[in-house]
Image 1: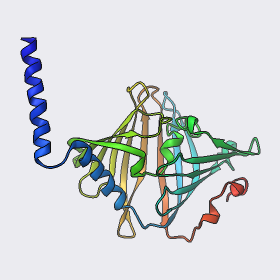
Image 2 (image 1 turned 180 degrees about the vertical axis):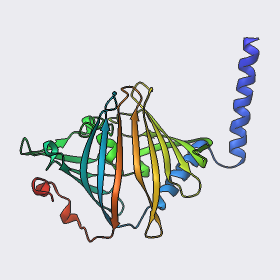
Image 3 (image 1 turned 60 degrees about the vertical axis):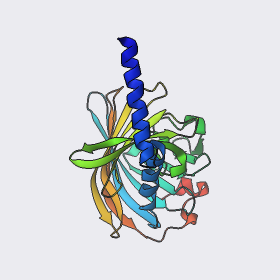
Image 4 (image 1 turned 90 degrees about the vertical axis):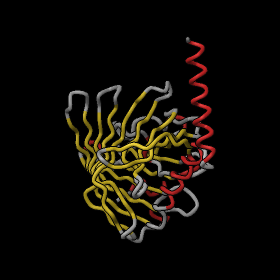
Length: 264
């Protein structure tokens, strides 16, 4: 009986593979196609400026609120650049984080810690570490680039009533803190609705939920709230955007490590 069940399963798997081939697209090809379309819909925004809050909650649901500003710059044919400046509370005021995302090479990231009065480079080996005590890792702050992952389409599924593609993305970088991510991408606008992150032991580590999408410049969707929940610790972090504007005139001169100490 057991051998018969295995044989039936093998037949069903073969039929599924034949079915996929009949439509001329493998799960890997479809996953890549979805990721490519997602990126294509978010090209041309140039630069942005945002006022935001990070709300950190421990396992007992006690909150710490941090006020930040974020400057971002779109780079053609590569990852984006961003500068995050902490304004409140007093113990983190003046802290600044600079990130140069790249499509095919390791990201470059630096953080200025006013208490130490020095700029510290974030090693590629340490990018899975927590960003300023939050549930977001340093690598989570990198811009989405298609080349950073390999993809596989899993299924169609609804999230909060929204029709989504579900695709698995596996990081190419061997120093990633994740073995894989499962992404729910809505079919209407190719926006990420939810992401499950699996740790190096392939256990579910975190879930990111993206909420309150707003449309800017009649083309670019941005979530005004992102909630990252750590399933292993019970901690969570909300990232809330209060004001967001585009094409503000930022240039590459506004994004260099020499100016981190006096970032304003």
